[in-house]
Length: 221
Image (cartoon, rainbow, N blue to C red; front, side, top):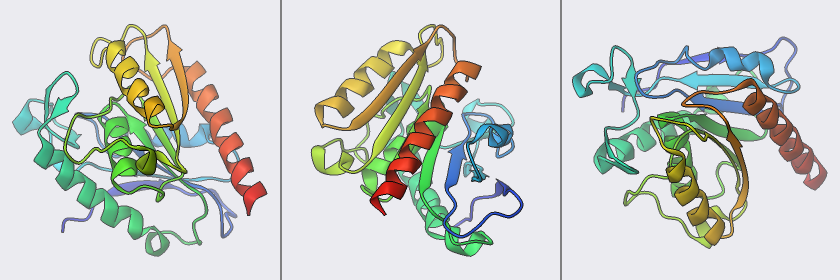
């Protein structure tokens, strides 16, 4: 299986048990796209930004990369998403070997296609990722994405979305959030008066949400 290329932001002096955030870029971008978010992460946190396995140009997505081939609305070509989830699974399972410290709490998330893929992964592998971040993605209508009480148990979801998003309309956020809520997911939803982008307000909301989740994890340990 092809290994995913990635970038890493690892603070000096990081210790065993430190949180690890894995962020997936959007359609047509690459592994460098979300790397600047590392400076906004709370505390001593490692950031890894893997690159999607599919070249975007053959699908009309420009010179960057893609996690799946988009169809319409909340539909994708299921085989492409399933293949990316296999690559991503191998990447996540290899984190102890990739990092110079023993990883602690894991957060998986991303922007646009990256958010969609992150949620799909968490639902395919329930319990493996305690915190999932979806920034302007959607909940894919695909066989590999099963939403149920068993699949969402023990996972906290952050879903931020622009109310004026022209690429992934806000109505898809409403639809996807409703499916998660119906299954009993721990869901934090934030809407912003913006388009298809990550706003400074969203970054602040995300940072507070991450801190709360890590504090809760420490109190349980």
